[in-house]
Length: 279
Image 1 (cartoon, rainbow, N blue to C red):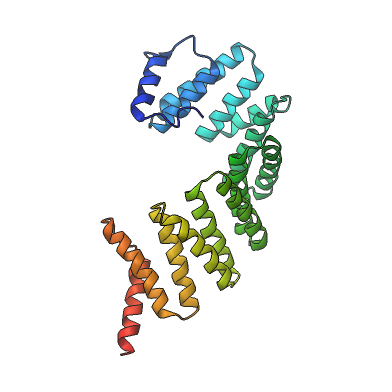
Image 2 (image 1 turned 180 degrees about the vertical axis):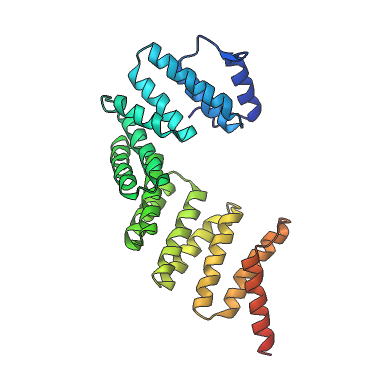
């Protein structure tokens, strides 16, 4: 939504400008109130966000704007995890001709079902949302939904389906030039290949993730990729290569003044002991 490019100072100023003490500018429409609610969340003002959403709901009801009411209820469900608001939105979404609204509703239903551990309902809702996002050519939305479907499949142990969803997600992220998202997606694909015992396939994806992460200075992504490559080196019993990857990870943490995670230190100590014992 609007506001993603605002600095915190600009966001505070905009919120204050649109507010009147404890209330809100009466000229504010419900769409503006919802945009400001997201801005309030970004700068750590959840109470103000909830108040803005309530204001948007009241305005939509007063103006009998059913689509705007549905958007406001969906925003409330998303921000406050309110299942009742989501259920109330269903009535208005079902009679709406706004495909963007229907897509957002199905997506929120999927998220709510996931949080309730209702996996069949989550899969059905995400599938409906994905179909609408494809029709709308909503590339960002497609990528997010494919990621969710991929993680559901991974949780169910359906690795082939998980790979298919995540591979499609990575393709869309490349189209969006979302390098950090690509690194994460490629690392997931590497892990899925490793789970199937496909070491060569895992290495290809981990190396691709590392190739993007390092120029982008995505430290976390590089750590995940190198850890994956170290695990593959271990599986191949290539101690030198495993040591090389883990040492580079530890060096990166030290350069940033951050504590090296215990699993990495433990494995380095094991390798050191093994090498020392082999002398």
